[in-house]
Image 1 (cartoon, rainbow, N blue to C red):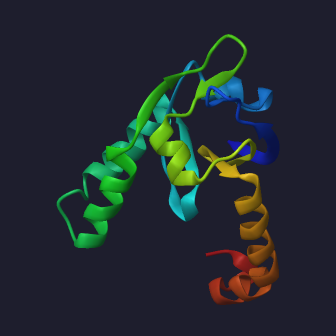
Image 2 (image 1 turned 90 degrees about the horizontal axis):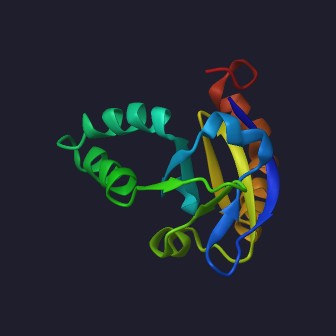
Amino acid sequence: MFIGEYLHTLDPKNRISLPAKFRKDLGRTVVLTRGLDHCLFVYPKKAWANEAMSRAAHAGGTAAERGLARLFLAGAMEAEVDAVGRVLVPDHLKSFAGLKAKTVIAGVADRIEIWDEAAWKKYTAAIERDADAFAETLGAGGKS
């Protein structure tokens, strides 16, 4: 399980160093794709297989299901993690997430997310502000 948040820099060649704590569980090949809230989702190859099958099962469903399937599947790219733990972020994904030099890598259960640092700060400030209301809406202290 991936947890925690780490500050990292996207280098001029669009490579980002993955946190050392995540590398073993990510493996040598990862899949990067568009995520929600304009971040990138990064999956270990094995976890991606499950996610892709789930999305593919809905690729012919409602407009919302088709849209999400396209969002996640069409832009997905396999990437090799190099010897020093870096991965290349393709231009179309860098652009989608609005990544600049400073980024945040966040562990979110079965995947990691790559955020532009400013976007992450804005997003987390809003979530922190509304967390009590979200927990109330979900009931039982946030347990659904």
